Length: 156
Length: 156
DNA sequence: AAATTCCTGACTAAATTAGTCAGGAATTAA
DNA sequence: TTAATTCCTGACTAATTTAGTCAGGAATTT
Image (cartoon, rainbow over all chains, first blue to last red; front, side, top):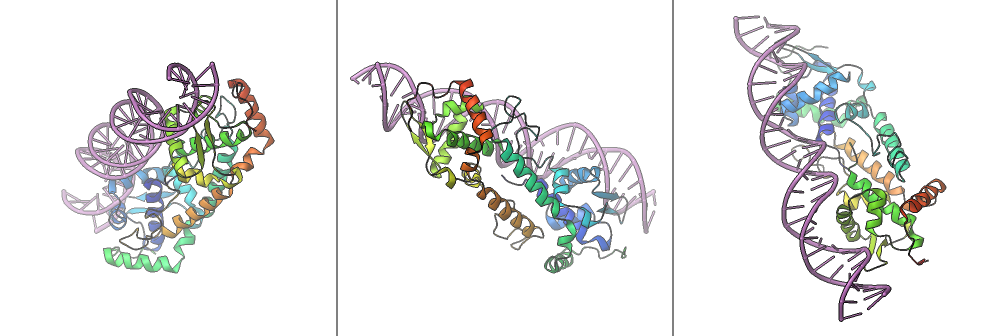
């Protein structure tokens, strides 16, 4: 049971945007370079994030992506659900027809587990990590290292 | 984030064996037919389960597989770990070198999540499900339907 | 008008998952 | 001792998913 890079990329990118909310929209090119993710691949992921109402795109120079709602309103579950199809351990998609139209002997096990994990990830909101001092430090360093946001007038 | 059928098959098969502990060893052919899993594929999975000390094979007629330790001592985490490689959400395998030798901004998130899930699955032991009346009923029906254990002298 | 950035869809490559096949080894029962 | 049963092993193939590429268009700003 592993997390695909798809889900990890998406959460990382969303975190990056949340961490720079005050500076203004963040370009995918920036994220691509700084986080080491293919630009085209990011575009695919953000297409889904956009359709799921988590981010807004701003076109043209100075544009980029910004959060479509408050960071305290976006959970890790939201993000993974958006790009990674489903957060589901059952075979039957939760319908309970996994064994000849009936529930199989492990149905309840996977169903319970899915609920628990969903609840767990749903409780983790982006803002919880934005406000961690350790992470802020890390991000500052990275921004300097990659020269991000140098020729940008502050949007806040 | 999905569970591969590998992990689901393994847990289902282990549950099947645990549910028939009193009858004696369970053949893979039985499990294959009753649970609808390819026999050869089951053999691959049981090779791993055996190497991880979860089951014992008994060769020859009347043989099959039985649990290598008490059902109260086998957790779902044990089973998934055995066949499904790892139960890990971090990119770095928990080492913390996911961003140029340092921790990436989402490291703690995935690390915590992995610990939680591992703990959660580690608490679920096979015997908890064996003793559920609903499941016992279900299994009895299935056994009759597939004519399992008819020409077998009781091993208990 | 030119640069920047989002945005879309089709395509390809690599990895993983799922499953097949052929055959051998141990054990039991006739 | 032979035949049947079952585990056991390894190599192979097919299908699916993941990851990534590519080409080009649309909106916006300077």
